[in-house]
Length: 605
Image 1 (tube, rainbow, N blue to C red):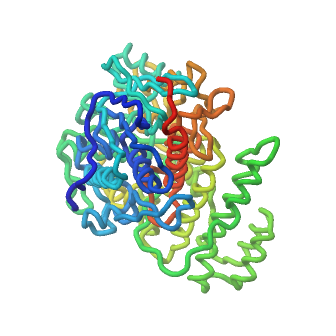
Image 2: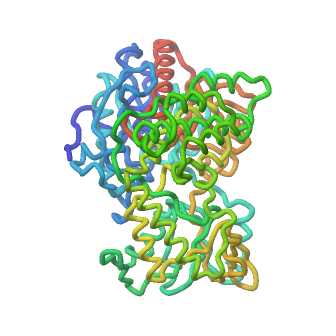
Image 3: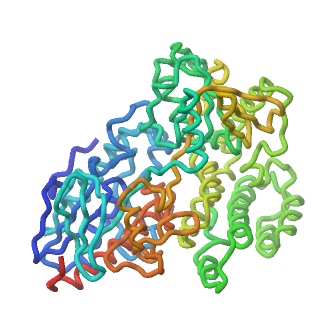
């Protein structure tokens, strides 16, 4: 691994208030804050003409890694992306006004095999190095100061300097501009979770609400005890690891050897199945020409509608057609022997056809149903599926997971990888539409952001060992008769009763329910508007925070998953357009332009 970059270091400092220097406060020192500093370094030679600039980075966690990728977590926890698919650097595919500055992917930087799933501590080290490099590349006169404190409030007039107040400090950090790069947030418990927590306290039960698994106290889950787990995504995978290998168990090939300290996990969810495995082969040959049916023109048309748009009615059909195009382009161009038409004829008819015409076209041109794209079945594979007993379901779901693993590692099914590329393309376009509701993000994650194949093989071993039990789809959880009780239509009549319940998913904070006092304060003051789903409203052009009246604040910006311009992640797969990189660039350019324009003018404190 390269050593730390020398040059312009980040340093801890007290509040700096030099009247002749511009200042920018970035709240959040994780990968999003680091990405913004990288874009400031790239754009400053063109756009910034001030006599120096102080960048104040506010975060109790170390810069670069932030909270999620910090070093102080279990080395057993992995990333869910191949090392070659993780980069913090722009390339020619990013649609932005600023200059491209390429850099190494995680696997190039760390000297890892590209197919490795690195642990999170290694990713944190990469992010710290990226931060140091970005700071070192800032032009002379631009200095970064790290304040290892929590920001609790932002105040200040719209036309004057902003005050960022820090926990435990009596004087604020002053900034001509403030960028909120808060990352994932904790939230107050919703009504259901409050009721479950109260029931647990009253009856001596264990209830662990939604949380970052690495931050959860799992010590209350006792060896051999049955534990009900709601959630089958990546938070569950972390839980599975920490309660098995994390308690001394080990794998001998495909067999799990328990330590005797593990609880027994009963897991279910809306889908009732784990997320799809990461694909285990590389792309070869021509890529589908994306976007085709959901691109900038279609997004602009949706945004121009005076009455707005409905996701299911107006957007989802475009997504279906885009993903289908990616799938069939790959099938016809690489596996023509499994089709009964020429690609040129199919493409022409596919482009012109409505939903029913496309369905008939696919049925006639793609003989094997296994080669047809069925998004509904991918999203809800257990819909209408019933098992006579819980034991029969254990066997059945293991068979499904095993079949999915084989498919994810067999290039004969490479249209699946084309659909993955289509999902990335679609996500990049949907970012422009703002808050489209939570369903799409869950669908995307289940198909495109699933666990590494080795994790699913571990899941199968734990199932065979009896440490992990499957409950089913549409799992209903109640608290009654002094226990937590779960049922699922997948196994009619089966009931699971436990004295412990874990909600294996991230919190879903709204602006009003976020535990972050800074964000809640902005909403209480009317300075932050929220979408129907509770996300912070921002100007899609540059990330400026919108108040409840829809007015953009001239001096406050926000980036990240708490906004309605949230993207799939602060880092991304190389050469896939990286929406977060595009947003970082737009915000950096807007900030630098503003700071240059106001340089030399007196600013109220």
